[in-house]
Length: 275
Image (cartoon, rainbow, N blue to C red; front, side, top):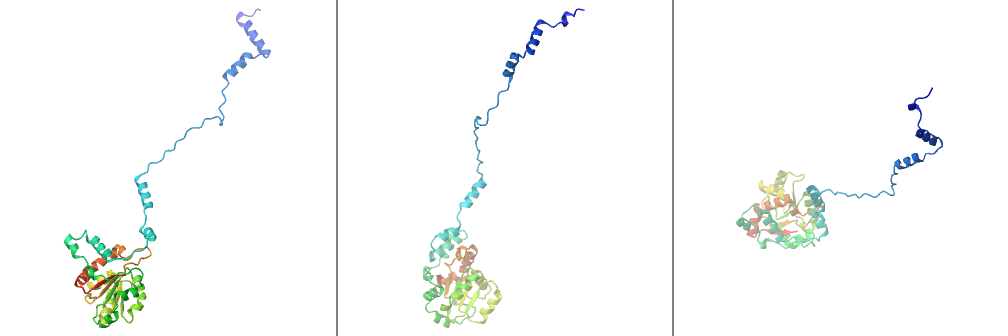
């Protein structure tokens, strides 16, 4: 039987099959080369990308912290500066600054201490004994003539109990046989100090302004017989603070001045010294 025309392979199909069987694949190779993927660039040939760093904005808190770190402490300043001895003008200025916001102008003028009440200040070359001998050369006569209880001839004011004990030990050459009383709050009650002042005659008192002020309030200490009041002005503690650099001590000193020291200075019976 004859095969139908539709089932007979065409001449073109036979040619393609014959070519494939002969190994001639030219057209196919061209097609594969045209559609082959392009190889990626190596890392060496890649172009570098630009990178920008955005700095964070400085906040107010950061600026404040920076200022705090850069701020110098008073101890750093004082450690590099030469010590300067205190002067009567320093005391006058401190009093004016303290009361300027608390008193009227007329009242401020009344708080001025007369220049005649100030003794020669320590020029930082004296020990306590040598300074007291210079400002009070007739000490032996004064202490012999003193017989009134509940009072002292000389009062030395300092910033702490430990400093008071140090001062008492350092004045041995000056005091001689004088009776000395400790006037500070550490380990000593006010009533004990009042009883000691009532029982015997005391010539020298060394202590803090707060306890001295309290004794005056309670009537245990009378300032009228007082002839010399010495401030431990130039000594500095471990933090390089002077007595008058501490706000609490400064406040108590000025209150003590108003409780009778100022009037005695104006009357001429009391002299002030800055050690």
